[in-house]
Structures are given as C-alpha cells and as structure tokens.
Amino acid sequence: MAIVKNNFFEDGDVPTAAELNQPYDDAAVVTATLGPENVADNWITVKHINAQPTGVFNKLFKFIYSGTSQFSTNSTSYVTVDSTGANPSEVILGYQPEQQEIYRVECSGLVTNINAEQTYDSTVIPPNGDRNYYAFRLLLTYDDGAGPLTLDLGEWGYSFTSMAGGTSRYFSANNGQPKDTGVPLGYQTFQFSKVFKYNGATGTRTLTKIELQAKVNYNGNTLKVSRNNIVVVRATR
Amino acid sequence: MAKTFTDKPIHQFDQVKTSNITTNLDKHLDEINGGLDSNNMPVDSVDKDSLQLPINSPLGTSGTINKYGTVMTSQAYYQVFTGPAADIYTPITSIDLDSDTWSAGFNTIPELDPTYEKFPLSFDAREGMLIGCATIDWEHGNNVFSVDDGDGNFVARGRGNDIWTEWQVYVNNVAVARTGKIFPRRHTTQIPFAVPCGTQPVTIDCRVQINTWRSTGSPTLQTTSTDFKIFSANIWIRNQYR
Image 1 (cartoon, helix red, strand yellow):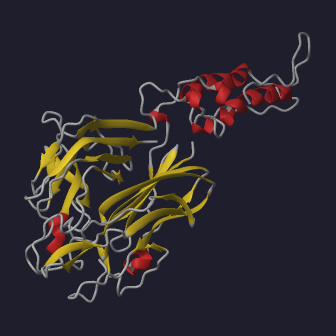
Image 2: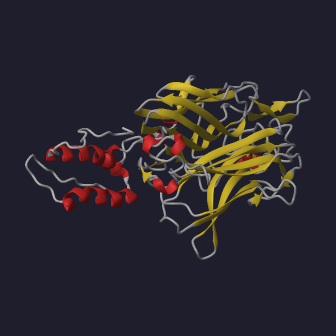
Image 3: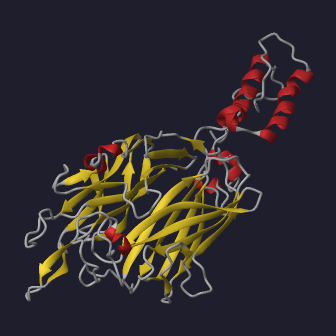
C-alpha cells in the first residue's frame, strides 16, 4: 500500500533528525507508486482519459459496402456475401480479448430483386413451405494457437414471399408458383445484432474476423444482396 | 482537496512545539494517503490498464433461455437470448392462432409459450442510459387456399395479405419502441431503443400484437389461420453510467 506514516510527537518530546526526515523520505518513495488508496472517489474525469490510442472503453471495427452491385446466391449451404466479387463482407478484428470482455456485432443490408421460383414444396407432408426461407449468419474465425477455427455466432431467417412456411396451414395439393402463394418480398432490409462474451483466459485467443454469410433453402430460388455492413464494438472497460 | 497549507506556521525565532510538527505534516500526508483528487492528477494519464478488468455478472440460465452480463468501469452489458434451433428453418415455438391461448392485445413471449417464462431480461441498473436492441426472428405468413378461379378450376391463392404483426419493447412495463405494422412474412426484426434510467431494478421484454382473421371461401378447409412462429429472440442492453 502506498500509504505514508507519520511519527507522533507530543509536547516535551525531542524528535531526532532522522525521525523528522522519515515521513519525507517515505513520501518520496511511495508517491512513485500511487494506487487507488491514495486518491479520492470519482477523481477521474474525461480529461484524465488518454484518448491516444483509441479504445480505452470501446473500440470500433467495421465493414461497409454502400454500392449497388448485387451478390447473388442459390446455394443451400452458407457462402460469404461478396457484392462486387472482390470485396467479401467481413470485418477484420485481429485482437486478443481479455476475460469477460464483450464484443457486440450489428449487421444490416438490403435484399434486392429476389427470384422466388418455388416457395412451396410438392410434397404433401410438412415441411411444405420451407422452400420459402433464406437465412443469414455471422461466422467468427478465431485462433487459439493451433490454426484457424470458426464459430457460428448466430443465424437469422427471412422468407421470399409473404406465404407462411413450415407446418402452417396451406393448400397441400399444389406445387405453387410465387404468384399463387404469396407476394414476393424484394427490396427489403435485413438486420440483426447480438452481444458475445469471451469467457476464456486473457490473451489466449485471437479473434480474426467476422463474415456475413447467406444461404437459401431451395436452390431454385435466388437471393440477391446489395449494400450491407457489419459493425463490431469491442467493449473493454 | 486540491491544495493544503501549513496549519501551524513556524516563524523565525519561534520556539517549536513538537505537536505542531505532527499536525503540519499530517495535513500533507493525508493528501497522499487518500486525498488526491482530480486537480492533483495530470490529464491524459489514465489508459485501459489503469481501469479495472470486466467482471462477470451471471444472470443464470433456464432451459433454453441464456442470460449473461458483464460489468465494466463505464458500462455494463446484459443479454438474454433463446434459439435458433439447430436447423434455422425450424421454429422454436409455433402458436396455433385457432386453438392456442393468445390475446388480441400485446402478448409477451411467455404468454404465448410458457416454456419461455424466464425470457424477460432483469438486472440491477446504475443511473445513466439504457441503450439496447431486441432482435426477433419470427413469422406470421399468409395462408394458401384452393379457390375456384371462376371457371370451375380450383387453384392456389394466398389469403391473409392484410393481416399484420407489431412488436414493441417494454422497459419496466413502459413501451419504449415499436415496429409499426409488419405484413405477412418471415422476418428478423430489430428494434433499437434508448431510455434514461436510475439506479434501480430493470426488466425488459418484448411483446407482440397479432392481427389475423379466419377466412371463409374455401370449400375444402375448415381451419384457416396460419400459425405464428418464433425462430429466435434476443435482447441486449448496454447500461452506460460513466
């Protein structure tokens, strides 16, 4: 503890030179290692925060594509969104989180002129309407020292048309066309966000990047995405 | 205190009283021993390592409901989420609007499905701001019926394109954000919100109003309403207090 003790003299005492000097000598030593016990409560103001480098409390990472080129997919497994073909939707992190640290991920974009060839299964039994679905996910790539690994941070879904999918009630004897089974839903935004906490030991994991990926549930349907962005907030203090 | 002064000044030719030495020195040492304040410290002197590490604030889990929190120097984060299922195309709950219990007003998720009784996010907030977001992946699509096209042919036609759904976020039972009407579809809806708060217990949940109707006109179907489905639900909150 960086506490300086004083000698207690009463009237009539005869202090020595060493006793008189001791508190000053002690103060000279401990003031080099001041700690929380030396300062008043709530002493820190905004002026005391060192803004260089940035990221004392939060640090921002982002990917933004604001153009009009369209990423197109009819893949039934996840593929990374890449609207221009040379600019994949991924935000590069490249840091080692501390234990209990938070990273908050927000993502949004625009689904453009989708092509919904079939939103209704030909089979009678459920899940008849699942072909109407498409989905996005955020994929984290990280490294614990033995090479890159991935973690599915979350998935979120949408439908090509206004028709209910899955096991909802429907006319089951028709292999429907989009015009018959709901209004096509193009040019609508997609958006989702989630918070993640790192529970591992400080400095043992490197967060590499987070990608936005998409897939459709039926390869006859085509999903198209133009502008999109990913924002990651690393919250540390 | 930013400054301190000699309590018992000693002048030339004075006789020194030894207790005055103690008194004078105590005043200065008291500053070092816990009295240093904002105006004693240099600006730009605090960096990340000067501040305490984040502290885990577990909120517990219940079944498929996941909750957690982290308390930091300037802010705290809390989150509750459930879903999605292993297959993103499979709902975690499906409400039959013809036979299940639901309200024409705003329904909490536990009211629609008691499995999610623990879904509301409850925590002790500190005075400041609550900045958060609810994200719900849900579906309330229109139905498809066999309809006579006028020539005696029965063809599939969508019904229910005028039904709608609205989500709201409630903080301590006060609505703070709403989506407006969303017409039939599967949709992942994100509802951001920000409200001031005191040092108090806070409960946040999201509620949904469902507008549907029973169709007639199909000669072959007796039940008509499309199911209301939830695929995942998530609320995160940032309590900023410094």
